[in-house]
Length: 138
Image (cartoon, rainbow, N blue to C red):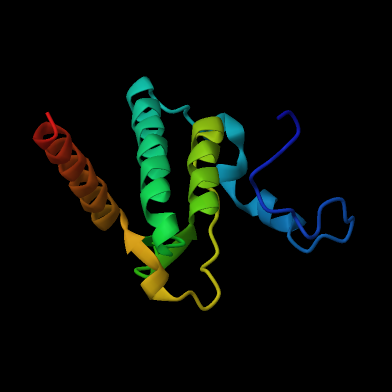
């Protein structure tokens, strides 16, 4: 859809007294001229991650998992991402060439999130099991 964004709404959008207005001036990364676009290989990797994420969500969301946990190198803290937020972040990376600033989730239940590696292993296990069942039924 045109005009629909996956980004959260800016609570100060259009406010002439926006307290964050000065931050853009201080952050040189905000200058889009300084950003290099993703290479074709990087784009392919992000597209593959989006495909993987779709599979993970399809398999794990019905089991009660709300998303993935990612260890952040920048702050050395785990970050809990809902399926929608992670998908939106990857799409933003494709569109803008960088990830969004992220806020830690408020009081997430760690038991409702799995790591990327766990999700990959789970998906691989489901695939192997379905392949074995299919071969047995022949």
